[in-house]
Image 1 (cartoon, rainbow, N blue to C red):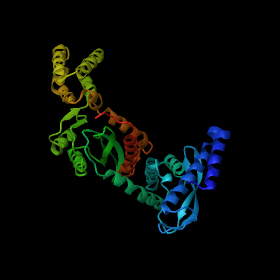
Image 2: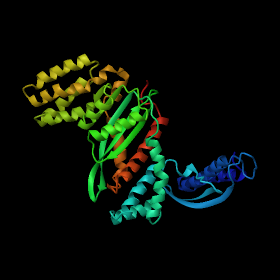
Image 3: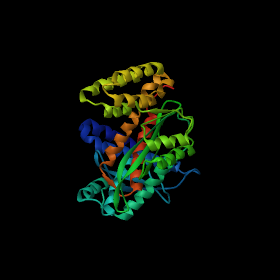
Image 4: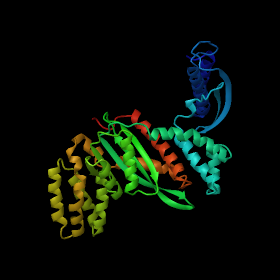
Length: 384
């Protein structure tokens, strides 16, 4: 329950929005966050203001001013303090993990002397302070345990799992190298999507994939009925080694793209793409194989390399036919994971070159953690 002064603040918020409209959003947000933080301290203490009780967890110790830079501008907040306690309001922390991770990546670049004046300027604007190694160290100590706990949290049954990789530039031993960012997402038994995990290492070869898949298994991943991914050689070998009995669906979208490399003439590309789509859109595997034979006969003379490639590779996209019709469209490609990778890229391109693998993993983890939280509380991806 709010106190009378909080009620007055709420009235002020309404007046601000009524009189100033969108121009009053910043001040309104400041008032609401201040109220939320005071209520959180009250809940933490276990008693109302000026109330005594055996359940009291500590003593209120006034407020500490804090300026936070947000999309609404600078907000000058009053952060509630608790005497002899590590209390800190989650109202200030929720939803900004990825922004904090981005700031840390830029700050680390600045400190290690690998940044440009432009990066230094961005860092100052984002962080709101002149960066020092001690400030970065304290920020890392706050954020890393949260992200590590999320990456190592127990998993459960996920019938459908999607796997993919992208690359980020990381400075290692004085050289800039491409590090593979491995990402796994899944659909749970209740139909919600979830980011299962991520890993960053210099190579995307079998050893990295194998360690990553083993870590998912060790965290309790089970009940997998289908893996969907592109045909990464390292991934194929690792998946077979760690989950030998689980069927694999090769991404149909990537198959269509790969086919274009075997089309001898530009004017044939649209027709070939349509023919392959017709194969994948058939209602059964038997029909798909019949259409594949027709495609082979059609292009055996005019595009023999395409015909040979199709006969050898397209059947890897047929596994989906053994699953419910209503699920097929959403499990036959890894496109949903491609969209996740685009969101990662949107954040990481600001950094361009990460100062180390830990910095890259931190930012990627923060982005994925927020995406996963949105998925788990949003609409179901599939009706199971």
